Amino acid sequence: MRRLIGSSLSKNRENGKPNNSRPDMSSKFPSTITNVRAAQRLDSRGKPTVQVWVTTNKGTFTASAPSGASRGPYEAHEILDADPNMYGGNGVEKAVYHAQHVIGPGLVDKCFDVSRDLAKIDDFMIKLDGTKDKGNLGTNAILPLSMACARAAAAARDVPLYEFLRQEAHAPEGYVLPVPFFNLLNGGVHSGNQMAFQEFMIAPVGAESMAQAIQIGSEVYQELKSMIKKKYGAAATAVGEEGGFSPPISDPEEALDLLTEAVKSSGHQGKIKFGIDPASSQFFECGCYDIGYKRGNEEKLSSTQLTDLYNKLLQKYPIILLEDPFAEDDWASWRNFNRDCKIELVGDDLLATNISRLAMAREHAACNSILLKVNQIGTVSEALSVAQSAYSFGWKVFVSHRSGETNDDFISDLAVAIGCGHLKAGSPCRGERVAKYNRLMDIEDQLKCTHANFKYAGNMWE
Ligand code: PGA
Ligand code: ZN
Image (tube, rainbow, N blue to C red; front, side, top):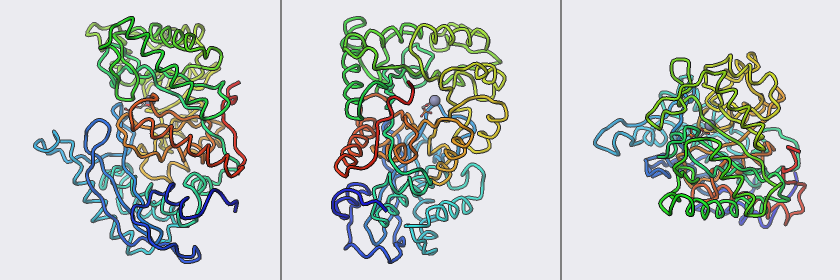
C-alpha cells in the first residue's frame, strides 16, 4: 500500500483525532474496541445531538451526528426524547443511552477487528436495531459509532481516513478533490426570509486547486455581503442555518442576479457555475407547488409551470445542478424533466440515500445523480454501497452535510475517498461549515507533500 504523509503517529492523531493516545502497537495485532462512550452535545442550531468516543489500542476516536431540517419521510429515523421539559422535546438522551449501553457493550463483546471489520460492525448495529429505518436505536446513535469506528479503522491501518474509506469503497487509486458548492443564499426552511427555494450555490469549477476554489468562494461571499449591506441594509447580512445570507428576497431571479453581480465584482467571472436546491417537497401540497408559502400569500404552480420556471432559469444563468426540483413522490414530473435534462439532476429527499429508493428512481428514470447524506441511511458501509450503486447506474454522487451540523469533518474525507468530484457543506462561514472546507485544504496539503496522485475536480463539468 502507498505510504502517505509524515510519521504514523502524527498522521493518526490528525486524521483520527485520538484524545487518549496509547503506545503504537504493531498493526499485525487486531485493533479491537475496548470502550464506547456517548454523550449529549449541541449542534450548530444549538439543539442536542449525539457524540461518541470509541477506544481501541490506537487511541480514542470521536464522531457526532448531524441532523436535517428539510427531512424527507424516507430517511432513517432519529430518536428524540420528546420530553417537553428538556430542550423543548429535542433531547437525545435515549439515543445516547442506546449508543453507550445497548450498542457499545455489543461492540466490545464481539471483539471486532476495526481494521477490517467496519462492514461487520455496521451489520451488527443494523441487526441489533432490527428495523428498516433504524427506528429502534436511532440513526443518531448508530451513525456516529459507525463514523468513529471508521476513524479507528484508519488509525489501525495506519492511513488517513480518506484512504481507509477509499479502500473500503473499492474506489480506484488516485484522489479527486471535490468542487465545493457554496450555499451563499439561504431560503426555504433554513432562513427567515420569504424565499421558497432553499439553496443558491456557487461552484468554482474554474479554480485550479482546492485552496483556490475556497479562496474564490470566500471572496465572492464577502463581495455578496457588501452588496447586500448596500442594497438592503446591515441587518440583511445575518446568515441562515448553512451560513449563507437571507436578504429580503423571494424571487429566484433576484437571488441569481445577486450571485451574478457578486461573481462579477469579485473578478471571478467565467470560473463559477451555479447550483440550486429548491427542496420543493417543503412547498408541495395537494399536487401543487406553492412558491409563495413563506410570503403568506399563495402562489401555486402546477408541475408544468414549475418546470417552465426552471427552464427559464437554466436558459438565463450558468446552472449546472438542480436538486429536488420536484417533491419526493412526484415521479411523473421528475421523469419528464430528466428526459431531456442537460444538467445534473440530484435526488435528495427523492432518494434519501436509500438503496430501495435508488432502485425506484432508476426504474422511473427520475434523475441522474444522488445526494449522499450519511445520516439519511445511518451507517458508513451502507452509504458507501449506495454510492457504488449510483455509480453503477452511471449517475453522479454529490456528498452533503446537513443543515444541523457539528465541527465533525468526516464528509470531506468521504468525498475525496469516493472520488465524487463535488461536495456541499454550506457557505464559507460558520465554524461547522468551514470545518469541512478547511479539512479539504488539509487533505490537499497532505497529498501535495506526499506527491500523491491527485487532482481538483474542477473541469469535470467542462
Ligand atoms: P437539510 O437540508 O439538512 O435541512 O435536510 C439540506 C438539503 O436539503 O440538502
Ligand atoms: Zn436538498
